[in-house]
Image (cartoon, rainbow, N blue to C red; front, side, top):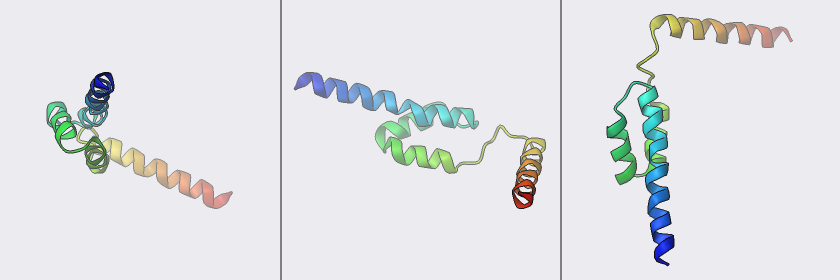
Length: 79
């Protein structure tokens, strides 16, 4: 029984890194989201990270994304 508790806690700590890494890739604090993930819930934190704006994208990147989406939509209408 003690092994399962240790395994569960280790898994809980390991899974908490997922939203923290995603937040870091978006330009937010790794430590903040890791702690938030440990003490709140990794699912809630993961949802929050998914809804956050990407700080690392430049305006040129956003413009290129909009143009690519418009081109795909135009191509789908023609098909």
